[in-house]
Length: 144
Image (cartoon, rainbow, N blue to C red):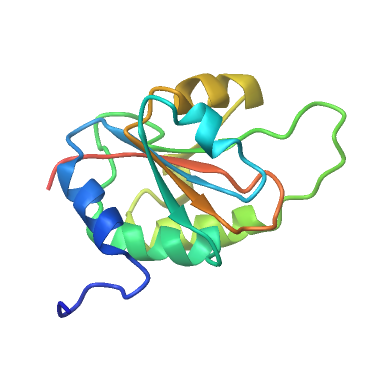
């Protein structure tokens, strides 16, 4: 056990966060995201039973967001014509604002298929049990 480390962060995830360098990206994926097929060339960390918001909050407690890019946090954009609602994004905005002074200005959106392409080059993908749709979020690491 360690002090001041959020309990939701597994040893494997802590090791991965520590290994990552400046500009490396990590995906926190919802339960529908094809984590194993997208993550063939990166680490896939299982976090079944956990939702994205609680993991995002815990990770951002330790993880500096990149200050050299305008949008170090990116969401998967809703497909044109899709009527899906994304209330979970409001939770993400509040969490990011809690940990980064740029708040909502640090958050961008990436078209769905481009998000998949970028996920293939991520350092790691965390596969969660999140049930909300379009709940995938990509973080780009900064420096301490």
